[in-house]
Image 1 (cartoon, rainbow, N blue to C red):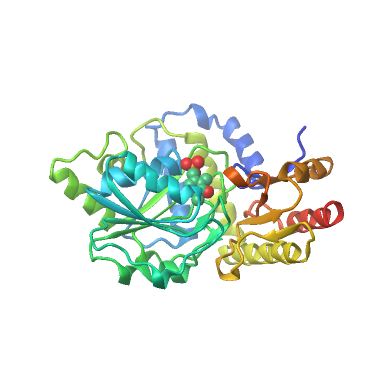
Image 2: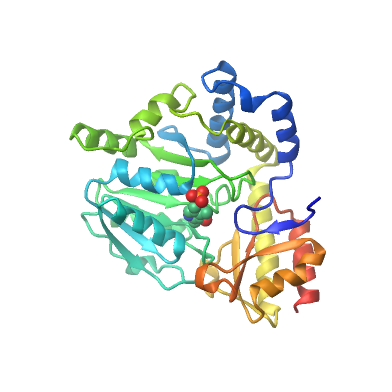
Amino acid sequence: MNKKIYFTPGPSELYPTVAQHMQTALEEKVASISHRSQQFKEIYAKAEAGLRELLQLPSNYEVLFMSSANEIWERAIQNTVEHESFHLVNGSFSKRFYQVAGELGKKATKYEAPFSQGFNVESIEVPASAELVALIHNETSSGASLPVADINKFRDKVSADTLLFVDAVSALPIPAFNYDKVDSVYFSVQKCFGLPAGLGVWLLNDRCVAKAEALKEKGLSLGSYHSIPAALSKAKANQTVETPNVLNIYLLGKVLEDMLQKGIETIRAEAAQKAETIYTYLAESKVFSPAVENPAHQSQTTIVANTTIAASEINKLLAPFDKAVGSGYGDYKEKQIRIASFPAHSVEQVEALVEKLREVVG
Ligand SMILES: *Cc1c(COP(=O)(O)O)cnc(C)c1O
């Protein structure tokens, strides 16, 4: 039996209740029921209602289930951009969304900040012609975060019709977004929801839907089965176009119920406490230093540290104690470690990790 605790930034630890919910799902044969059945519609409705309640989603927002955040990037461009998108880039994930827009034949422009740095929002000018602006709340590759207060400044920087998209893949449900200040927020469940990978959740408002319909009206292609109008018409009936990841939608509804019971304020307070424990240690360590220097831009959920000992060595030292941290991303594979602090990681587990690192690494 693998007893390791994964502080890796996705996939990561499963939320503590998932094993029990999976057992129940098997007993109820959730993975065998028809995705057109009443039972599935109830599973779907429960997950959607849980999301709306936990995130305090305004009623002009729709919820669509996709396969991943990568898919949402592609669908976002296909459905809401005719000519041009603009991207804030400061790491691998934000860069990938920018590239996807180019690969789909759009004019993609960017404002780029160095890896490990946040953005000075005041100095960013958004082209008036940008139809979609891609913001990233938590750049998982570098641990740089764009605070909600900075995200909220963009509405005044963009044209009236511009859609503001926020990548919150490795952050939700921790940040309390002002959903009226943006148009779409998306995430995948293998990060902060502590679920197996293979489900992306796309929150989008009526302005995104209207844009997709306007492009369709013009005779443009929005893609096929997961165009916004196609997906939405099924979503309204608590269904999906394709045979979906029924098991994961079921588990999401269950975990949302657990999170609601725990309370979002408690989950957020614990996230702040765990991040503080980790950053305090990093500041004292002889081996590590926080990769993101400006405290205002330091992620609470994926904490990245420069390391003078190779990341693979750190994990060798941790292995006998059944703990693993993430390696650095891409070129930083050995030069940095990434520590996920998701709702699935308890305060006690984070404290135990820090204690062990102090002991074996210093
Ligand atoms: C993990 C991640 C993605 C990609 O998610 P997938 O579900 O693998 O498509 C995108 N953006 C950020 C910030 C991520 O952390």
